[in-house]
Length: 119
Length: 111
Image 1 (cartoon, rainbow over the protein chains, first blue to last red):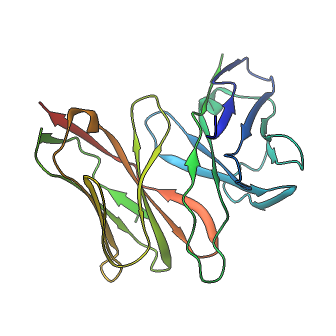
Image 2 (cartoon, rainbow over the protein chains, first blue to last red):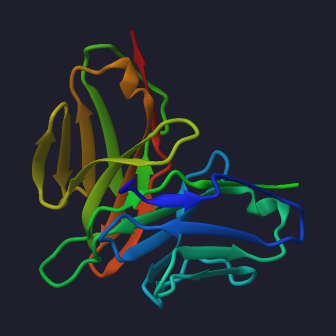
């Protein structure tokens, strides 16, 4: 499957537990983005990563949330000490590259998402 | 003022007619414009992207961009029931990779 792969598709956690969401970008893509979609709300940017680097984390909550994209393996979005308000769909997207001089922003392709439910 | 605005709908269009979806944005530095389709409970699916003023056509879909008016639209010709979904407009700026989404327009095609 050449698409963006996310797992798990559904994740249930109790308040105070940790949630780990994984994302493998499309083949050949080196730019990964995480978005969150709260019930009945729009998609909100969280973080943009390249291999081993966080490029833009302006959308990440200040506490409990972290993201990484190691040299080997998938990108991980980690939520510590989850609360009910963290219940949402978390989508990962990837692109071939970001915008560089002379080139426009590349389209981002989305994975199927992880639906996180907090009990 | 929201950064990206869309009419939330619902927009109802008879099967076979043209559906017109509109989006305005506030950042004049916006450079790249995307339309995504999202079925209920599913992930966003890229439909069209446009970078330059004017029209861009792909099959039944046409994206239109007017940077002077800060306006981008999506036309769907010969609408089909399978086009019923929420359509998301998204914008990025040069050097800023994050997609800023509108809240989406819910489109219903009436057989």
